[in-house]
Image (cartoon, rainbow, N blue to C red; front, side, top):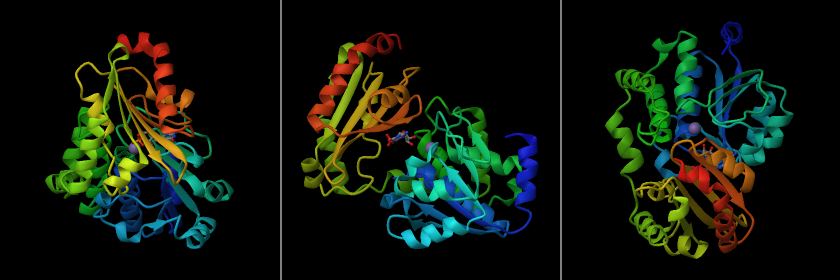
Length: 339
Ligand code: 5GP
Ligand code: MN
């Protein structure tokens, strides 16, 4: 962020404001962590702050400090629309375009509030007065830490803020292993632990709270795993029937796609999950090295994300979607085999 922007922001928040914080649909650890981390920080500055998520999120994210104050647009539409209309400032976190908020898109686009974007996705839209966008960042949580640091306020970071920010850095780095993780990330993590983030407990809350049914569904997903060696690709399918068989709940399939990528020699992994209610196949793509699943998803699956992690959707059937995926792979064979 420019120095002048920071001075302007410092001035803007020198008097109490009505602030709304929003993140993307189907919020993940980074969306929840960054929103609630920023929420606790802004509350300390005596602002009136409300976090609104487009829709509900998995149980394993419901222990996060401040979880009980989060509004969900899908079930609190009128209250949320009111808050958005009356807001002086709206922070948009962990997304790069209003359509990533689903049904909130219109309310956000019509709002006259000053917008501040903090995000690490590629190709950010240009709607915000202040845009802090950096694709090299591990997570929006790391950026919220930097934002607080740039405003010389790290002394305000308490255990609640530290816990929230630790969460999103941990989940978006695959527990500090993705290439985006830097020594600076580890320094920030060390600071957050010093401020009171209970690192072991946070890992436990996210990764060691599986239900028996989720592990059974993982077994089914791994049974469905297929590889295409000439394209260094692995993919998994899950049909609606399979999800139903294991009593699917939101968040069950989080992380499944990474098992494909853990196979030796695999550069590209995909998971195709049927959602009969929405009438779509939800697609998650992961890659190693320079192979951009963001571009692949933008070109073929109406989505986007980061170089090594992207999502998208298809309105074809599950089988047709997989056939389409297999049919486009040869055009990527050069890139995939040069990784
Ligand atoms: P996931 O596969 O875990 O749903 O998402 C991986 C990454 O891609 C996340 O950073 C997420 O924000 C982004 N992403 C997921 N789905 C979409 C989508 O439909 N459109 C765009 N632009 N990005 C997506
Ligand atoms: Mn993120």
